[in-house]
Amino acid sequence: MKKIDREITPSFIEGALIVIMMISIMSVSMIGFGSVPHIPIMISILLLIIYGLIKRASFKKLQDGMVTGAASGMPAIFIFLFIGVLISAFMLSGTIPTLMYYGLYLTDFPFFFTAVFAITAIIGISIGSSLTTVATVGVVFISIAGSLDLSLAVTAGAIVSGAFFGDKMSPLSDTTNLASSVVGVDLFTHIRHMSWTTIPAFILTALFFMLFSSGQEGNAGLSQLREQLMNTGLIHIYSLLPILLLFIFAAKKIPALLTLISAIVFSIMISYIHSTVPVSELFQVLFSGYSASSESEQITALLNRGGVESMMFTIALVFLALGLGGLLFSTGVIPVLFDKMNDAKHSLVKAAGTAVGTNVLIGEQYLSILLTGETFSEQVDKEKLERKNLSRVLEDAGTVINPLIPWGVCGVFITNVLGVEVIDYLPYAFFCLISPLLTLTYIFTGWTITKSE
Figure 1 (cartoon, one colour):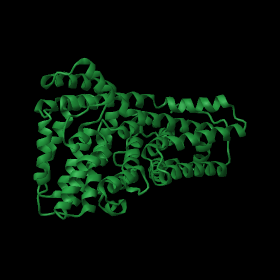
Figure 2 (cartoon, one colour):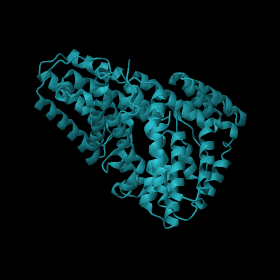
Figure 3 (cartoon, helix red, strand yellow):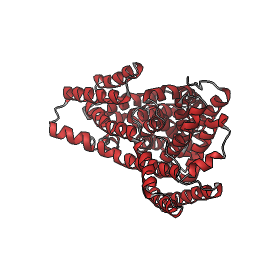
């Protein structure tokens, strides 16, 4: 975020009371009344403006702070828009369905829970959405586990672990793009640096799930799903070429936006090999998302996604949350709170604690990433640390924590979809538990913590 001058210098007690009030408003609204986060954020913005005016701050200065905060999210906004289009293009080309189809063959692996984790991880990366992965393939695995009389809690833990690994490492993920853009780090630089903690967490998680071997193969219930995917006419080996293009561009450090645009164009060209989509229909799909024509509800739920429209919820939230962040700076609330935290040697530790705390208190992962990133970016610069260290912390202690919070947005959603309480699957969501521990270990040891020149 561009530096925002404080118009007010509240006392520490005032700043703390304002934060408690905001947390209470958002917690009661989202947890008590089931509201989306947009409305309580707007209420908080209104109350902050009123507070600023009472303190005789200029309304124009308050508005400028809010606009400056929101403007800092523009790089992320463009990324989100093109990701929506890319997902639609990947559906048209068959890239995502093909990844799903071949990923489902991993159920031949003798360790059912490890296979569940690996498959949901692959599909999570291909989709870029943890909740969509949970609501589609996750439901399939829970049904299989129930029919095989296997532990639903362990199965749910494997599903959540894999889905959030995919969400964390996918270039299509909104949280991954948000974490990188909010601190001004290139998307693929962020993903590469994050792999230092994420890959060990993946390996450890897979090993832990091997301890829960079912002694059975869990692929009986998935053969029909594979057949239904094949019947869509979208499964082709050449459909994986756009993924190869993404990897090549990432290796060559091509800017994320150019990579996304190239992949979109390439995917649309490939789609005409196996289907002829009229231009008018193509434009509609790219804007509104892909619409699958299948008798299977599971296939429809898996494939009906993407488009510019699908990103509007996230885009609106980004604008509001960053606008709120700008107001928090211009009213002096954040500066006065962090003036008390003058031990600059541990800013990454404080960032991890803030990301976890925001999830616990508010139950919203986007705000966890946004507010933590905005708050600690300058402190990281002062310590002469590269910002990619901070973006990694935002995901290791922000993105993966939300499904572990019973009143969190992801936790509530997962419980409703899988029928397993958060408190039951929490001990088995190994990836989500290991990630913050690893990132703290790296911070304290200095391992892979890169310095800026």
